[in-house]
Length: 260
Image 1 (cartoon, rainbow, N blue to C red):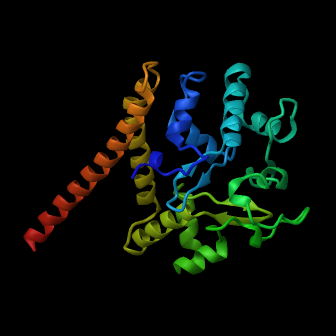
Image 2: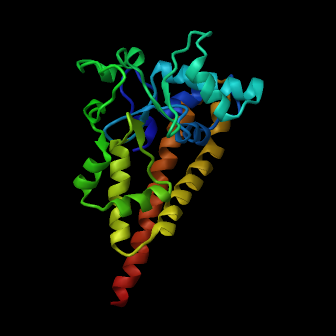
């Protein structure tokens, strides 16, 4: 399943967000949105399957970042500072954790988010591990649930496969990070090393860039239904790409079995 199928009502997939932004920002791509997330400037929620889902507030935050880049040519460090301190345009801005450069959502924003319903408010000036969203893991919880060592997790992080949030000085990993870490740890246990893990990441990024080159021009068309058709094509590209990878690997495995 592609990421564009994975949102719930009231949230947007990354493909839908791209479709909303293209009129104002013709050069925006899915890769750029993901890059801004990796830099801690946006923080979409995740579904149980690990797919991104964007609230209206997060989309507006993304618009603000892209406008600052386009109109003022500002570096991300300066934009991050403005997001933290400038409220003149009425945009809600998360609180910045300076030591890690990652974003933590304050109570005033989190309380209105659908995922916060039914949860008690966080204590002022302190953020404990218990305040982590459902489906999140502290570093120790992640290590314990996967049965891996801290050195293995460090290799996975060094390969750029997972990046934790910082909540009150505690590393927090979501479900998608856990799934990635589990698969990566298995590969490490089978003899691969960190440079091999980087190869998986680079391969996935190249594949997504290839799909964007095909789909983004279609999203820019103004004909009725063009964007919906483009997102449907993105779904098919992702599915076909996964099928092709599986078939190639299966054929390679078969050749070894036939020789045995």
